[in-house]
Length: 193
Length: 193
DNA sequence: TGTACATCAGTGAACGCGCGTTCACTGATGTAC
DNA sequence: TGTACATCAGTGAACGCGCGTTCACTGATGTAC
Image (cartoon, rainbow over all chains, first blue to last red; front, top):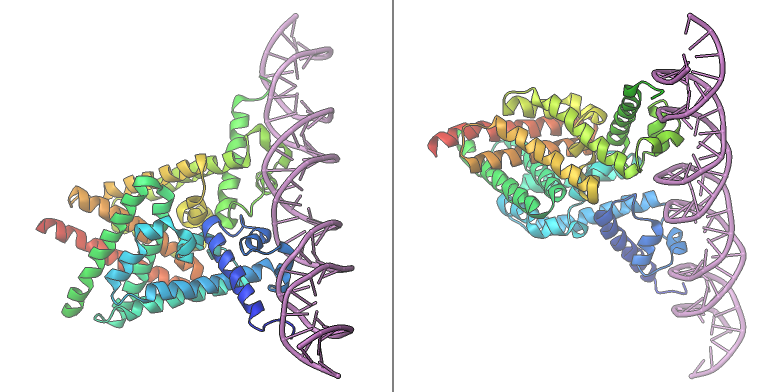
């Protein structure tokens, strides 16, 4: 093997990083294979030595993002902190480093095949992460709170970005406050169950 | 004027209807001008007699959808019914007839110029609709509940569509239940304010 | 140690294709007389 | 009432362009001797 065995893996990782950022920033359809390779410091012809197709790149980049986002959000130990981190101005301003569901959700919801399956797994993983942070209530309430919290976080971020400017900032803060209110009532309710 | 004066307006409306459905079903980038015209029963060359560009079509189709969705959701007289209607299996299964934010949110959040402004207005209009359904609490709580409810509805729908199948149906029901819980506590809280 | 060699990561030109847009035209219509 | 005409909604071929993908190649590398 004439090249260091880690070399190709490292390049591939670099392409995945570039793709993950570019897709979240500008959308899957608006980012060409050439642009991804350019961002990775390579020429576009070499792409097919690493990936079978753009579709495969999308699926792998999505899985890549899922891992990174899991690390980012997995640090938090309670649901309130988790939600505040997600619905932060930092995340609002940097979709290219943030959650793939909030950055590409509607496009990915329409996808098929491997991309769609990867997206569904991505969501399930995030739900599992949330469920682990909800300890007190019944199983049903836990499921419900995890689903509702994720829905509120994702929707809140998408809408805040859609509004933009100070209106967007305001909306983000309002969603955060709403979710905080809704989640703070969970433990009280569970004690009454 | 050699043609009935309403004729062109009717054709234009037909193109807008076709575009609005096609975009929500398959996404803006994946739907060509030719496909829209074909769905409207016309040839694609005639498009530019009605619209300056595809971008203008997108903006006008979005405004068109906003009006229709406002009529659909405006019928409801309370927030719970409104949320249940939005987070219904019917809406889940028919993005092409439903909310543009849930169908195209992430793509539109990245848009610029007229499309982005139209999208922001679309969101504001929907928030206003929601605020009118929340009468009891303080102004701050009303804003907060409207933002949180919209976030939860939009996010819930996008994620349910992303999951697909029975997992999607389940998630939709859970978001609906969560939002129902969160909203039912509002009046009680307001009486304590 | 030094050199010839095989490997294969990366290059860059080329391809077919579908897109948004343009434009010369066609033909259905209401109006003028 | 009937006919010639002007209008303009809609047609369909054509355009330049950027896309995803292919492929013959180049040249940096580790290995063999």
